[in-house]
Length: 134
Image (cartoon, rainbow, N blue to C red; front, side):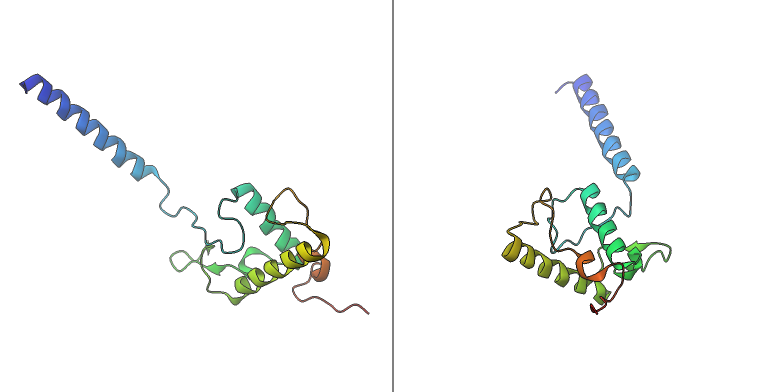
């Protein structure tokens, strides 16, 4: 290998290394992590936000009702954490409503284009704890 080829190879290698270092340095350090156990793993951010907004409206709560505070930054939530039992309750209720929709209304709620007949709002009506019908 002659010297000019060696220099060219070295320059290209350095440029490639700089690109990788630069890309990793500009990538967000705390990119939101997902911990999806009931919702589809490939759900879009937009659809996930719609689902979460539906939960907030149906229960009259904010995100911190189910999502724990970040241990590294108290001004943020750790959306992937399972620290709060309310998140487990939400997952249980999602499975329950999916079963009701499938069994009684023949709706496959795993397909985001099919509207559910039974939702959180059906029972909660903007309250954390459903109120009995009188």
